[in-house]
Image (cartoon, rainbow over all chains, first blue to last red; front, side):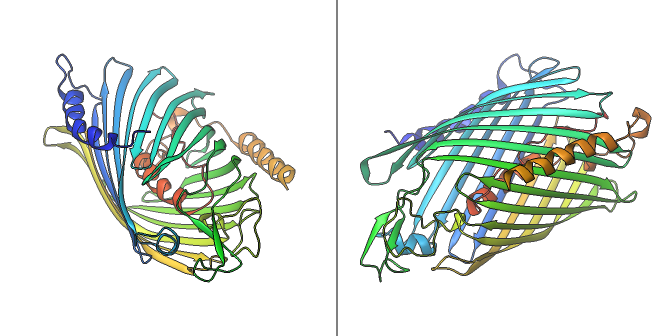
Amino acid sequence: MVFNQTRRFTSVFPFVILLALFLPGNTLTAEDSFLTRVLVYVDDDSTTIVTPMVILQKDIFEETSLNFQYLADIQSCASVDVVSTASPSMGYEETRHSFTLGAQHRRQLTTMGGGFSYSTENDYISHAFLGNLSQELFQRNFTVGLNLAVRWDQIGRVNDEHFEENLTGLTANISLTQLISPTWIGQFVYTLEYLDGYQASPYRLVPVGAETTIDASFSVPETHPRKRVRNAFTGRLKQSLSERWFLEQSLRLYLDTWGMTAQTVLLQAYWQISVPITLRFRYRFHNQNRADFYQEWYPALQEYMSRDREIGTLQSHLLGPQFQYQTEAFWVFDKASFDAKVEYFYINYEDYALLENKEGLLIGTGVYFYF
Amino acid sequence: MRRRLFLVVVFALIALNMSCTRVKPWERDVLSKEVMTFDREAEESALDHGYYNAREGAAGGFEVGGGGCGCN
């Protein structure tokens, strides 16, 4: 498997941007846009991730547009699970590059699109075909949307040329959006995901007979079931409380064939201070119960064994404000917007021996230009 | 458990549709505001869910933008 393509793509990326913007014969039209976002994740478990993203969208015909997205995950991690089981290193640094090229076509009340996504890092390559279709019905009171994604991944292990695993997946989303009243709008989303292949970590070791690898008589590589079917049901409501205040509330219920169940609540209040300025306040709560085979520690060998705290029992809270500024006719642009946020999160692990909880910040900003 | 959940979802769907009155185009002044659309923050949401999905065992249910209020 060739994992050194990262450098090649990194060097090619600026030229792709230039080509997309300045191809001869391309003229910018009313729907063209350029946006960039950055999200920084930092926690007290020695992990920092910086994620810059760029999206270009350009009309090629009156009803058809092309879009290109580049995203990177620049990760520095010395998390307790990495340090305790992934030695010999005391952590790692890696970068993932993701490229997506897509097209969108809108004809009257129908929108359809498709695309291809490719992402690469030093031990993981992913490919995906994407498709979407949405139709507005009943005098545009009701919209039904369908999204499909098919992916196939290759998983490697650094410094181990013989390790090679695969993962394939199919994800289907259906969304139903309904105008409920002149001040209420509702949406229901169902997601079905089918995964088949390697879903453990090639680096994690599971201690047997003790909570840590140091105390255990021996450790074994993590083993997860190769098949997983995931279901997520989400209901969302958005309402206008007054001329300047808006509220969004949503509830997601999740269950999968590994025995995991989860509930996620999201509340977002928007305060339009003035025409260009909006403040958003967000609170998110997530609760999940562990997968059937997950245990804090394993007294003896069993078929499936995991050290992945993300499939254990946990609760997380996230809250924080976001500042949004939007203006018409800015410099050479028809419209521009800027936003910035700082969100605090806290995660409580109920059955993870190495860490009881962690907290951190999500710091994000975005700049959008419309031509 | 699954059957009960399925029934709850089906019921919620039916209730949502049945109870909804048709909103006329001239009644969509508030709904046409950008803040009232679900995909207003689609790119930010996509990045956020990348983090949530990596730190939680659940995924899905939020990634779909689209919809919209039919106000354009």
